[in-house]
Image (cartoon, rainbow over all chains, first blue to last red; front, side, top):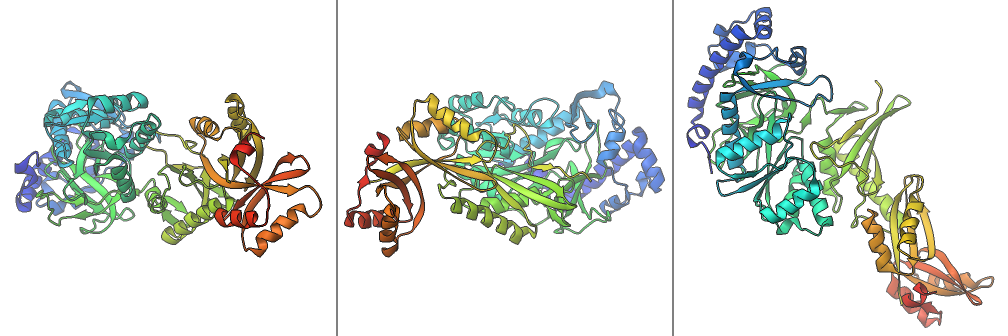
Length: 433
Length: 142
């Protein structure tokens, strides 16, 4: 079902007119209220009045993660703190955290987008949503929560962690929709199995998975394990949180971006040039309705492409391809660009390989080495060494063939790779460069 | 006339074999025979135990990857050429041996564990040549 039929099915010309009006207002407001944007626009010789059409957005300077950090904590806020009703922050694992704020209206906008997203993912008023995204400073938990309430569904605010209790709740409360990271879902399935609970027997119909890159093969695995339809959801706290884009369950082919709130662009990450629709590059967002924390041409580092091809679900909003990786997650191994999700695809093509893997990158004698650790599950195991060795050799060969990079595949014991309750740690880079 | 062997996947890290054997000790399981095959990264520990199901459960509960395989316990004369006689018979019948390890000595004879690529054919050939084969029950209780 389409939650907001008026806005989600707008003819594209009408959508463009709304975008232009909202974009102009946003640029004028940040120029007047956020010193960072005023300085940046002035330096670039840009004034908001220069915007006459949507293509003029290209004249506006980019905003980067570093800009947000430099203005830590509240420097990018466009409203006084008295109007801010909520603060979230990114984990800050790779530097100081990024702090984002919301006005009451922003919270409403977010709930609207998230309600649309849940609805596109198969949820409705009658559904019970088991929300295993973390609640707290991370936007995942509360973002989904407000959307679920806006939609009128029943939400179980279970958050991440306490995995055994989650299984009991899934069994007893009968949730029909699961919202979680894909890696945590696999962990849930694993623990459920140990407890003698089959995910197939639970009442789940749809799973809405995101917050980390995942592959089509992982989708097949999740759909098979849980007997559900799995869709990809996208969002980032800097732009709003979850609910910036969602796959519709009808097509499961690309994520609709709620363009009446966010304008997406794809750029060449090296030159900053805007690329035409269909080409792969870095995703850039401009928010056009946010009050407390507007972002202007924010470089997400996520790699994808955009398509305006009409969708069978009836939504007219543009679709982005599943994110294939982040330009900062991208590993450069002996000059070859490698995304963890590509390795995942290769591994999961092989029957019986468990989706628990980790990439370890090192530098030995000035040469990059990639080791792919793969857990040996019951069905993969053999009492014959030669069978296990040929499996390692096959996986190495497949990685070399598909990705053009040599990797050493190392079979490891089950559960030896740490399980995450949020985003999976797929890469350990030991290189000291 | 098959014997069930259990095998365990082990990473080559210190103390892993001891962890497996201590689980078996706690479960009151006797190890009849064992062999360890290893590579630089990992090893496969193969065991003949007094209680297969109990051992499998105890190890699985502790998170080990456990496999079960059919192997054959063959009586081998304990004298020069004893093993060679059996291997010659198998070679003539074109039966491949994946691996062999010793179980124990039963009177004047030794008992050895054979893993074949085709267990049914191997059993036929051995029986046709009057080679003594032990049943699982006999081996677990030895």
